[in-house]
Length: 159
Image (cartoon, rainbow, N blue to C red):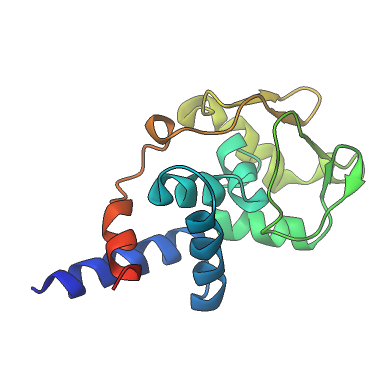
């Protein structure tokens, strides 16, 4: 298999993992490229900071797709404000809270019960009893444990 095919496959895998279309992924890459630091790491950090991913990581949702739907259905507040955009980028010290009305939803309760098995990344904290999570730090590359070779994506875009 050619290098190009391998790079393309890696990009498709990451897009599928985070549930993104081509144009949106390209915009994320352009933003990551403009930031200081390593482009591939910047890209992964931005993808991890998406609200749908943060909800999945906190355990409110069983998948990123489920998290996207929950965001679209207005189940969550960020720092007390309604946010219904799954691609919203959370920032340091942002508080993600489940709306009071949504705390009765069985699917969310079941997802939170499964958090003990899956765990929460160290850059996030979860208060299950209050149905809240907090961004304690921005993720770094070592905390992103998925098998992603971001260097292949950077090489693909550099052609």
